[in-house]
Length: 191
Image (tube, rainbow, N blue to C red; front, side):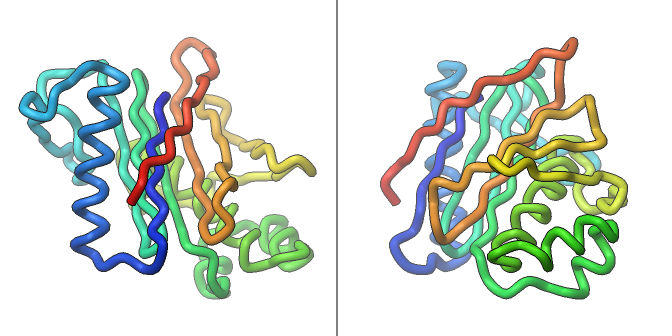
């Protein structure tokens, strides 16, 4: 898996985020699969998740917020989410987290960051499935080990938190093929 990350020095507008996402997607597809920009033709599944037309073995996912853009490219279905750390949302936590997750968020040294660790993991999973928030996200549950490794009740998926960037939390999800894990190559790109 190739993870392309561009962190914005300030806050990016929606059009700046889209432009950066397109640039990272072109770079990621070329780096991981040798797909030239002129060969990129996208289509969408029934839930709107984009995919590369005519290349069933090439998978990618895009996430962006005002502080960063992330593109994940792999040979298996993947999902990525990125969120700027800000105040946690009690309504979202009540609807999308189970009771034990809510307790762990509130007990954390930084409850706001902890909220987004759980939220990005959940969103990365539903994006890997390709169905987005039509999936009942409360049904995917996480426990984070003391070193930050996510453990889930979804054995068909692997997860990783990328926390090298203090202003954002990034979560990666990949669907396992034959139980295989996935190695990721993190590439930082200038905004």
